[in-house]
Length: 300
Ligand code: CA
Image (cartoon, rainbow, N blue to C red; front, side, top):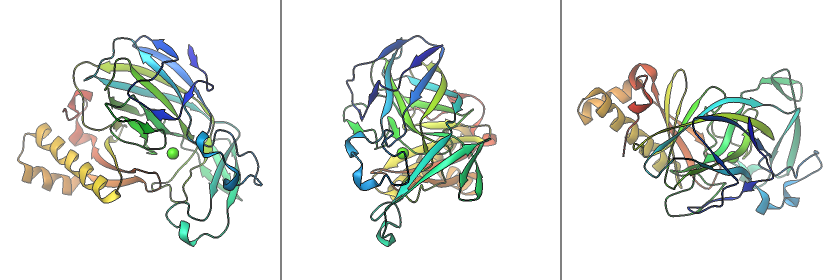
């Protein structure tokens, strides 16, 4: 199986990027990733104040996917995320939702054992997920710490093992890169970090030709999440709601008003993260309404 090594990484998703490898589809491959702090934090004495922020959020890649064109949808099936033995979490003054109420910089190294993340004497079940995953954007460049239509730092906990991510493609070859894996994270990511880990991520790639949606979508056994990232969370929540209502209108062949009512009955509008430059909302449509076909996604 092809391995994309972690020393090939980017800090900006740009429309034009030099690819590190060319991959045929369908194919399965492994991305080796470094943690979002670029491995700079290795003990509890390492503080945020000493971080080189130009090295935050490395994303391994990008890879050029043969035959993928603007207007297509890239399918990324997440097969496996291999956990290391430790992760790290950081916070401090000005960091996260309660940053104005924190007075000390704090770092914790979190042991990961037998599928659990240890925090003091608590054991939290690991639920590994990919924080940063995206393709080359249409016209603007985005730092890997910022999410938008191309994906990026969506910090959405459903982007984990056995989920399938659908990304709209804007450039030849797609130019996929990923990193910032977390062993576990709650919705909101309120202190500014999850359990940040370096990890091996096995994915299977495929495409839908000539069709795409407005925003990334992640599909799980339970249903689909439309993932919207904008500078303000209230705008992101409204846009995610709009996308879900438009989806239901088309899928169920009902009026806008009926679709709004159906969304009110069965769609969960939630927050992925509140701490990155663009905030991320997600609208969950249960499988009974989303249907089985990935082609059921709302198209531009
Ligand atoms: Ca992140």
